[in-house]
Length: 309
Image 1: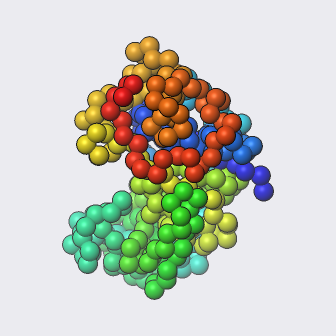
Image 2: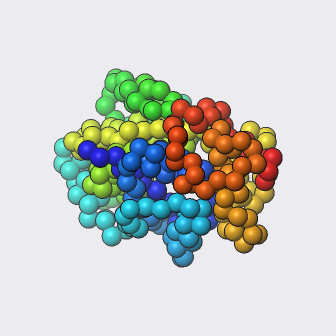
């Protein structure tokens, strides 16, 4: 199978430096090895999707100097594919309807600390109803659907950057949502169905999504598809060590573009933050392809202190 990566912005807002660095490194990782790239617009986040944000993201990526071989492909027209996957999992007893609210989960969880998807779900609704209609009739609530995580299993997920990670899936992840109560697939299911159908073999993203790699590996296995090769890199943080956000100033690509920043200057900043070029370098993505290797990327979080610093 040939190498194939993807750039997958979500049109819920404008792209910022953290997004740009992830997309740049994902692009370099595939281009340096002679692979192809797909542009996928992940537009399944309901009311958070903003009109025109998809085109703005495309313009930002092109301005930065990134290209792709196919796309853009949108998720919303693919709802039947996600529904078919849900039906398959539910039919095999691997997914079940859940009517618990967030407060219900917080009250029932033995470990109430929040992870990337909130407290670990204790399995309250597992095996309670045969289908969504029965759950709705009894509770008066529209259910979501959760994947039934195998009990007492350790899962090893290889990673080209962090190294393999072992997960006690029931204890650390719990049964997770794959279909939301608003009738849309959750991120975990949608990306597994898409990456499998679209031939994606390489996924590079921030290490905040490490738990998602474990969840998605379970879904790949359940749906009979091989998982992609994962690489999870440290995020861009501010001088305070916290994830880059509005408190660190306006770091959107739109603000740099409108402020007259040259894309070679911005790309050079990102390369320097990643340990790929000296500070103050001017580089376009194409300038960085030759000699790029993932093991050259700095293992520490990339600290953004402002332009040229």
